[in-house]
Structures are given as C-alpha cells and as structure tokens.
Image (cartoon, rainbow, N blue to C red; front, side, top):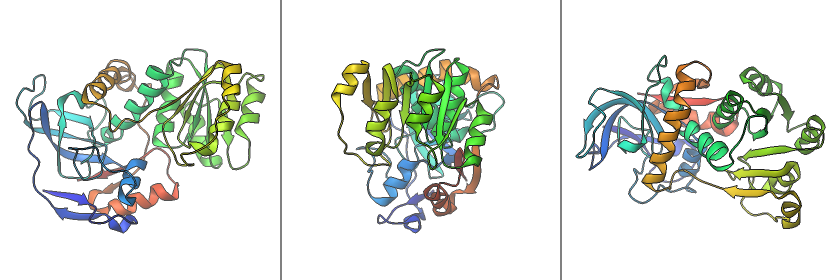
Length: 325
C-alpha cells in the first residue's frame, strides 16, 4: 500500500507519499480500506517533530479516517467485512489501509457519505469527552469556545446548542465569526479586535463563562481564569499559545473554579473505547437527525497532504480539511 511518510521532520514538503508494508490486524482489531482521513493540528506537530505517536501506534500521521472494513482480526464481533465505518486512530490515517481497535470504530451516520464521515471521529470524541464528560456542560450554561472556526470549534458550537447551552466563540475576522453564527453561536468575539474577557462580561452581566474549551494554552491561561464564572470549568486541550504560564490560585479559590488539561491520542484503549461508545450513544443520533453536521472546508487528494497542511498553518479554513484516496 501507500502512505504519507515523514522521513525527517520539517515543513509541509517533509510529507512523502511512499510505498510501505500493508498493516495486518491483530487481536481485537479491524483493517480499514481508507476512503478519507482528516487533517488535525496534531498531524502538523508530528510532521514538525514535536508530537511522536504513542508506542505501538502507526508511524504515519492521521488521527481519524473513514472507509470500509477489509478484514477482521481475531476476537472481533459486531462488525463485518464491507461495513462502512469511521474510526478514531492513534495514527496511520494518511494511508490506503489502517488497523484500528474495534472499540474505536463508529458506523457512518445515516444520511452521511463515507468521505465526509472522516471529519467526525476526532472532533466528536474531543468535544464530547471534554465539554460534557469532563466539564459537564448543562442546559442554560454558557460555553466559551476558543477557535470557533476550527474543526473542534464548529463541532463544539453545534453540540452545545443541541443540549440547550449558550455559546460564545472567539475567531479571527468577520467571515469566520459569521460561519460560527450560522452554526448557532450566540456571542461572537473577534480576538484580533476585542478582549474576550471584557466582551464576555458585557453579555453575561459580569458572570462569565461556565465552561471554557481552550486550544491556546499558556497565552490565555490567566485571562481564561478571569473569564470563568463562579464554579466555572476551564478545559485546556491545546498549546498553540505555549505550555508554561503562572496560575493565580487565589482567583480559582475565589471562584471555586477548576482547570483541567487533557489529551486523547495516548489514552488507554479502554478509555478511548468508552469515549467512542458515549459519542455513538449521544452524538450520532444528533448527526443522523440533522441537528449536528460536520463542517468540511475542502477536500484534497491524499498525496497532496502537504497542501492541506499549508491550509491549516495559514488558518484560512473553517471546519475540517479532508484527504481522500
């Protein structure tokens, strides 16, 4: 088969389409013929040499994919060769074939084509596990999403609205903010022109956000705490703004607030399977019913992964960028 390889870390041109050995499914795994994969920030970091795959994972980038089951490993039940699926991966999505534990499989939702489904596993698992399983967002609460125009952001807006929350987003420029509004965002903040702490206080009567989903990290830590409501919950899932910052514990104590940092890729298989099962139970009916939809910015051939990485690095996209075989 062929896959996107990274012979040496570097810029987008470090991604090389090359012939590699076919994967073989082990116990509890399935082999997927990949129809499409999606590009994530973690793939960019891996290409740059900053985010190695977990031990035992495929060395090729790609944290999600869609396609058809080509073979079942020993001990797999409930799935059949030919089933159309999408999957949460620890790596290997930028390829013609990939093996994945059966617990990380999801059926392609009703009404969705197999290619578009490639943009669902990572964002739905990330948003559901962090906003709902960790931060316990409730109806009537306010969620602040940084990077509202990203794949994570566009999904977080929709899921929060579907459960009856109010949603604030930060994004760069009117075009991205308008797309967020179309998806249901109530409070639109241009981080280039406005202070999100002050804007949020204005529209919430000084209360702030009950939950903040943050992809920025250190650069926003102190201001995020300022933006939290009493009993607020800040969940950090990215470090685009750095990894080290001071935390004023006095502010947290005064607000009885919590700060949590999580990642998905290196979690134990049992934890990933539990998240995927929760996504199938709670999110898949919303997608099949048309209340939530994947937002796809563009689709490119798999061998043009370098061009897709440039799109992410330029941050000109809204939603997901897909790669197809």
